[in-house]
Image (tube, rainbow, N blue to C red):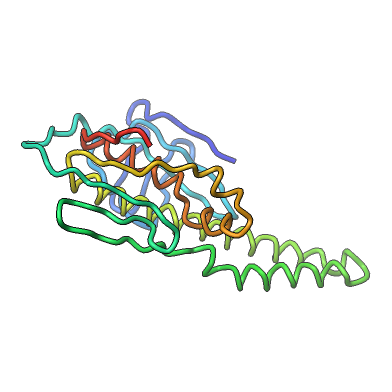
Length: 211
């Protein structure tokens, strides 16, 4: 469930850790807005029993680079998410593997759900089961948010590092169909990493060659 009000007549405003949403009023945020500019719209969504807001901000045209920077080459992987080559310097960015870290908890939740389904009398266990389903949704949402946050911070730093960014050719869909490595590739989120990198590079007027 989501809705996207536009900022007509400055109805969407931000002050510190609060945001004013049309027809709702002031709502507290977990962190302040990190961009300065004109707010165009806000998308409010419900995910895993939690509310999120994404603000579209017009920050104006970014300043072009003063002088050409180095070319950054990137090799993608699973254990090491990205290896950056910048001239003679090499930097490794590890994969936080949020799904792998959450697997034990997710398995415990699934086992509890399975046990509740075997108890006679569905009404007696329905409330507990719904609580377990909600707990599982929150775990999956947490995994997704940790991965996206890591991708965002990493791709932003890479975009500011060089004038041109070259990414190795990847056949991500084929990699994920590999039975032994599919989960690991999905946990790394390589496709989303490359997509976010393209967005961040364009924001600073750099270029991402075809990948």
